[in-house]
Image 1 (cartoon, rainbow, N blue to C red):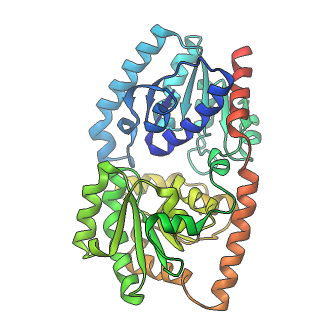
Image 2: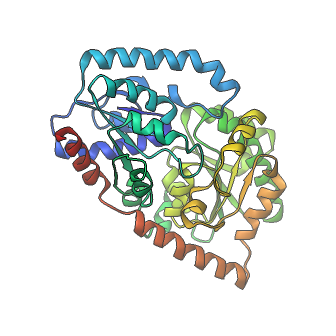
Length: 377
């Protein structure tokens, strides 16, 4: 198995639960993180090695290292001949590796369909060439893949079963030291170092403006231990370090506790939607990365909640539009004590509840069954 980044590690960990129930003597190895390690995964490299943001300098700087890891991994896998290789997301890394393993007779499964419906549709031929089966987390994906001769199964989104339909806000607030009456804003500037470098300062500057408008407001940010120093520096630079609660991890507790979240585009936005939380989505990257991304977009939305709803149910601020002033104004918009805002929040909760219901499946069991069918084919 290969999982890239914290989100891939979480998805792979949930997938491993179903596989271990199916095969108690399962032996898994490759590239992964702490959630996979809890299930007995043997990580030859850490998932953090694959966490790259954008298309420009960071990718070029680390290209040789990443290609070297993939080459070494391919050699070891061809020697060990596993019964199946499962690539969890990270399509830029996994698809080429899967193609070579498939050509060598190793069954290949890709968990999480690459977003060919959002951008880079040319990947469909590559997926067909590389993968025996795709495990899809969104219901509309298998039909799209089938039109291109790609076998796929909808398994639901594992987070939809992991996150309760009605989160316990009171318990989450108590765990973080907030009271029931506190107005809490969660700041989630991303799980990658490069995302934090692009977004943390903007988020804290926006938070300072929100604090000026609502002095009693509380801020909380879940922090990955390796990124804590950078987060603290950004908060200090904005004079916000004393006004923000930094907690190690616990992103789900933070989302359950908050009234609204200012959040980086990515899997975390879907988590926020499953927690039924209003949000303001933001993203920023290097100029070159943005130019490439903008030209390949197929939809007007980048946030998963908006993509799944097919409309702007929550605001998005991308690149130059992601100014502290715009972000602060959008956050305050969710906190207005007015009938129109109440109606907006109620409608959002209904949409997110319907989304949660659609995505909730026994993902682990369905995925394990699909993998078993691949092995028997």
